Length: 533
Image (cartoon, rainbow, N blue to C red; front, top):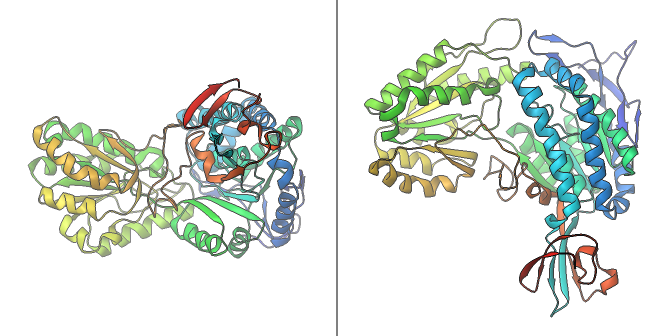
């Protein structure tokens, strides 16, 4: 942080439908992680008056947004996507500069298309309207539908997805706006320039679509205490957070103490179980497959396998030997920031102190950039079971812990003592023994995660309505909701609105049985019906 405001060219924040000078005392700069150097652009750390102004603006237009025609919101999504596509080269170049994530295939051919796909899918779902789940009981004349919360949604974005999870372009923004809620976005300080470029296009799309210009506002950064004050403010209805467990829990406590909804993705170790017979068949290829998943994005995925459980028999020893050789021979990826590097050093030291055995890596690398050796630990299942919480701390980076069980019963005990995760994966052969053991361990793993995988690594997260990117605490704050998947992600920011004996012409269009506008699915007297009514 810098406090000297003299001769600084500080970028403005997006408040009240325009870019305006921030109210600030301190500024910050992003890093180029590949070199470790600060980038020249300067951004403000907003003081409370900026946050208060944003809250007042959002609160002022909550009724206007709540009654906004779905077609206008869909038009905004399409217009914004069009503008993003036209400016793709500049956006991905800036994201690469601020994160060191590779242009190809990560940013250009993977994450950017994913971001655009989310907007296109959302526009289609908004126009189709089925996500509102209209239910009509004509006998009792009671009807209900999903609608806006009636307050502000605050979005905190993560450092590891500068495009598809950006606060001004990700599923959280899309979901909150779809439901008719005003949104205040906090940029991640790791990629403010990327957020700035997209915010400029967002404002242009707001103007062209006819949505209120304050429907989405953006601040680059603010003090922790102001963040806690923001999420507990009376005007706020819900909070979306993706980030560290420490920060997430602090925000969660403040929000929920004030009665606000909190949807946080905070921590996940994503355990992978290799059943005994599969390692007898393909130990080498599975070791390579595991490392690829662990090192994807330099291990900075929330779905990175951080815990592996195997049987400590001959096949398990062969697998661990292969895995150690791979971890020892592969180059280190670039980490997103000095904070990620420091947290990775702390995690490695904590595992050593807890009694885990270092098999590969374990040390930071000298400049340029922020790098840490691919790191592999092992620990006996008996020691893991003594204090399982110590061995289940998420650490961004290529760091994985292998738990060595002496018996199948110990593997089962490890499964029973897992914390909640986004994912759990099970690899098994077609043998009778593995199949039998699978059905012993699966019921436990099914309750420990949001997404259960068979014979597949968890790092890929498809944007489909069937996807569930959530899980039991501490992976997220609520296991019933997902931050990925359209339209399923919408419902985090929707309230159920019920109408009892309300006149036909006073009902939302989706609840009318006489000539509603559009074609959609509705539940009428217990039967799902689609058509032009």
